Amino acid sequence: MRGWLIGLAAVAVGQAAGPTTTVTAMMTSPAGDLISGSCVVQAVAPFTAAATGYRVIGVPITVPFARGVFSVAVAPTDTATPAGQGYKVTCAVPRQILGGRSVGPYAWGPSCWHIPTSAGSLDVGAVEVAPSLCVPSAAPGVVVTAGLNFADQESPAGTIDGINGAFTLAHTPSPAAALQLFRNGLAQKGTSDGTQDYALSGATVTFVSGAIPQVGDTLLAWYRY
Image: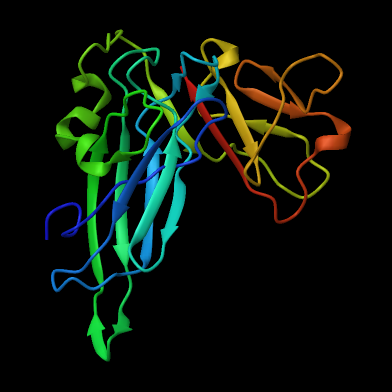
């Protein structure tokens, strides 16, 4: 079964604040059933949205769809910095009973999307490109710099017990501002404007007293080095 099932329309993913392009699709089985499931949309590499200056990072977004209707809003990539960015998309449909028949399970992807700026919604067929173009080094317009690497969804080393506030990254972010740190999915602030959640020194992240991760919390980091 190819990438998008027969009849797949387009979708839009709320990945970033500011102007977005909506992608929609009508998800159907080979027999034409309106199916339900979910797709995971993820930026292949961090980029900056031109319209707002917002930084879009590689946090995966799960987009559910029901009775075939899929829609998601994502930041355009045609004017992004660096150029040639994209999203990788994987979808899954669990077994379900439709019209008295068993349908699924299905899974497909990853597909690759390059998103143009558009005031109107776009069908998925208008944004899907060859999967090879979702490899950052192969994306057109991307300048690959020797020694430039990215860490995605890294769990900083350190005990999460409500007492310890020091955590260590596997590498030193370069520049320091490249670090995007999330606690339970919420972005943490590394600025010193009075609303700071943590300080970064080399590869060490030190949380302020009021922001120390508690038992059960999840820390994830994205950065280049």
